[in-house]
Image (cartoon, rainbow, N blue to C red):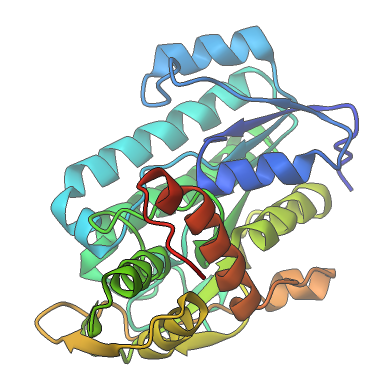
Length: 318
């Protein structure tokens, strides 16, 4: 077991949805949380190396990444590949040079083949073609896993990887041009309710199935792995259940209070038909998620109304 008490723990990407949740979770661990401000560009090797030399973290959680939904991935393939490759390579190498005791790299479920057997186990990696709409991001995240494995083999570094499923929660991105499906649905339903619109539109057929995990559960799982796991193979982190996009849209509309219809734009891509991960490995170690999808969406909508919508003057009434 790796003890976090009294350690200096660096959270890369602390202002993002995942990083901020991990920072909140670390408050219970009696450790010193280190963060770097926006002046440190993680894509720049020299800046990252200098920060590590000056701060010497003993544990590192690499949650920084350029992220986005289907539209963003499809529109900016070079940025998604280059930025993520640079971030992970710079932080992992700097952690080794600064003699960090442990590092946790966070990937994404999109690393798996488009038509992987469901639920997807860790050993499905590199067993088939990727989903074309996000392959650039997937390739970068696969490289991060392999970097951690290579550093374990060559340098003996205790670097591990976790693959979260689709995440949502406080500090999510609710911008319709770059967000993932769940926060996008929350904004669409909220704005449609305020406008008294007759319907909202979802991309594709609504048939693809997706798994969702609240970011606070993800943060708890990350701390669990940091303490309890030391192995070369990456570990899936998910909720263990999935829903169709159409079912998700209905659930969001019910939480938001939008009573119109849901239409489907069949000209838009569906993406991977199903993406449910097997989290048997971490569950067998003793960890389980605690937040249901309904409760999680309810909490996320409350956050959206009190932060995102409030800033835009769109709070309305519940």
